[in-house]
Length: 282
Image (cartoon, rainbow, N blue to C red; front, side, top):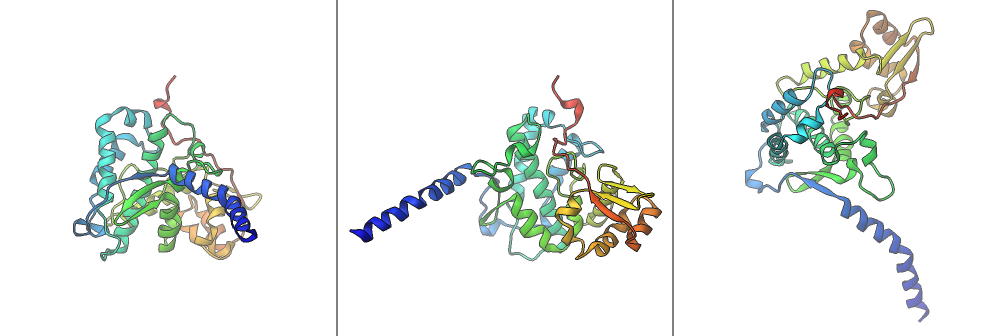
């Protein structure tokens, strides 16, 4: 009797954990479609033209998104769903060129994020949808179907893209916030990937909200992205500054970075929605 009472007590103590797991599973939202293995294609063969057209129509040169207009358009909302279904046709096992894989995962991250915001729009910030107490968390519970798997935004960023050893992905994937890099108003493609990454990285550091150089104080103020993901750029400050030096906006800043002759502080991150102001309802 004592043995069974202990077992019962153990199950009771685990009940909150099972309840939490059940709640987390209930929060999951799955995008895309299941595709038979014989219909899947190599990742670098995925057609991003639908996403490209949507970006050109709803994203301006600053990377701000007209969420209101996109949500109001039934046709274009369906096109976004169509593109996400196209992403689901990618194979996780067929050989693909690295540039094509990078372009695929960057586009996938950005498209799923936009879809996630539209599900809750109007909203002021993605952080309003990132519960840490067992509720819905857009980064963990919004899942893209690819092959036989579903993959979250967190997993795309941390388990896929960051492991591809291309730190400039941090200036290409966009978490729908003002302090994020701009959402490029064209799809990333294998053919143009290098030029696109260079252009968006330079644009990122040209923005005073992401980079400031106080010459007198000999100090760089960098985006918090360089704090959170600093190890992706190097093992120490000298290596990190050398990695970003080619993209800094002035020769003076470049030289200071190469020589590691500055101290570094990090700027406060603005999580407000990367929304075109003209689209806000009055």
